[in-house]
Length: 193
Ligand SMILES: [Zn+2]
Image (cartoon, rainbow, N blue to C red):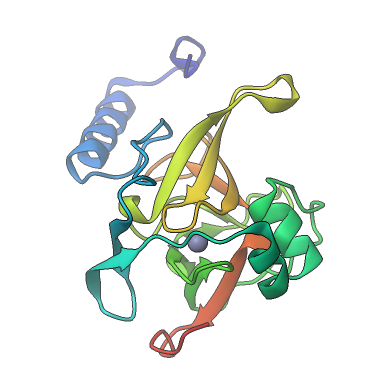
């Protein structure tokens, strides 16, 4: 499934890979599989860059009409209707300033610039979320593919998909839509974006 049989590794490389995988599991790094939805609970615990730690926040539930008032047509289509922006058109594809990427819908912190890399796909890509609790995943079987959808844990916004062909240290590639993100420059996290 992960193509191990096609990957030739010497003993040292195998040990390093095993250690990285084991370390990832011990550290609670997110893996691309379904996580329990907290949608029914009303309140969730997420990491906040502004607070410098975990906080408990209300889930954000709004009607399409309310979201439409707050978002641009493209943001609404992507974040609320599971759309995908055209590759190489998003404002954060080639964006490398230092800071935090938040959910465009609810302001939940999602990714740090330190985990961003150029995947060459035309979409902003990260190897890990800011904290495992801040995103959730779901199986997506549309378009005759089996993919893992990534959603905002606080408002269920569609962010993109996660694949297991990313760089070290996680080996994950969070392929996101710029339209679902809102960037906050380092040092200004306290301001609501
Ligand atoms: Zn959100």
